[in-house]
Amino acid sequence: MSAKKSKILVTGSAGFIGSHIYDLIFDMGYEVYGADDLSGGFIRNVSQKKFFTKLDLRDRVKTAAYIEKIKPDIIFHLAADATEGRSQFTPFSAMDRNIVAYKNVLIPAIKHGLKKMILTSSMSVYGAQQVPFKESMMPQPEDIYGISKMSMEQTTRVLADVYGFEFVVIRPHNVYGPRQNLSDPYRNVVGIFINSLLHGKNLYIYGDGMQKRAFSYIDDVAPAMVKAGFKKECEGR
Ligand SMILES: NC(=O)c1ccc[n+]([C@@H]2O[C@H](COP(=O)([O-])OP(=O)(O)OC[C@H]3O[C@@H](n4cnc5c(N)ncnc54)[C@H](O)[C@@H]3O)[C@@H](O)[C@H]2O)c1
Image (cartoon, rainbow, N blue to C red; front, top):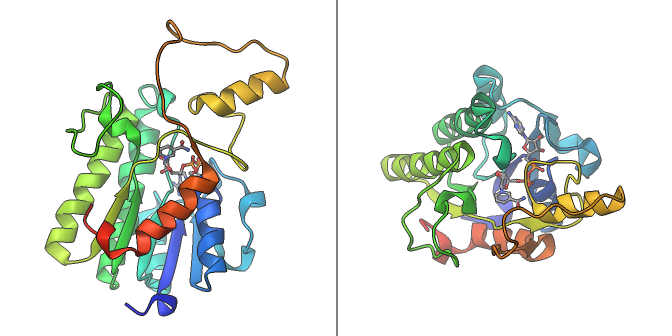
């Protein structure tokens, strides 16, 4: 694939990670489009407004028309209801914004010549297994968010096998940094702690405080995700 000629779409491009991914790809000289419904992201995160479309990917007809217009060769899919801690209580949102929105993007994209999908999944697919998580572990998601991500991963594998596009699945672990939504109380303890400190509130620690998590800074994560999207060795993994 002649790299710079590829047309790229970043979904969730007004969000935290998606906006960083968008900017990195734009700076590499690609023709890159961004779509987001601004339900969780912010227009202030969008650096290239003329390549941005406000679009709710749950709308199958509008999404199909958008994909037909752009005909992306490569998609970095980041759009999601990422409020993991809430997902048991908002299962329609978790499934519609994750599973349904994803298939609304993926299926027309395949029809219009998709060459590669870089799917943002989550460490939540591992569930409550013993840390540190390894890619060889069998996923055991324990909440609706994790289940929806697992379903998106499997859908990608099956359709890639049938229709012959390449894919990469990325499972970020607690990303933090600039443009993170600090007022989201449902995920990302670093943001929750910063928000509490800014408001002079105590930090609330669940359990005995001995639990372990991996935290990743956005400037480590976003370039690695972009790199993984273009590396042959990452395909199908
Ligand atoms: N931040 C983390 O620590 C982390 C960890 C693991 C996985 N992830 C995944 O990475 C991706 C990006 O996460 P983030 O932290 O940047 O979250 P985010 O909420 O900042 O970004 C998600 C974006 O998707 C958009 N979106 C939601 N529903 C949409 C719809 N129906 N149509 C169009 N746009 C829609 C939101 O407006 C938001 O801008 C997500 O897929 C998330 O599940 C994030």
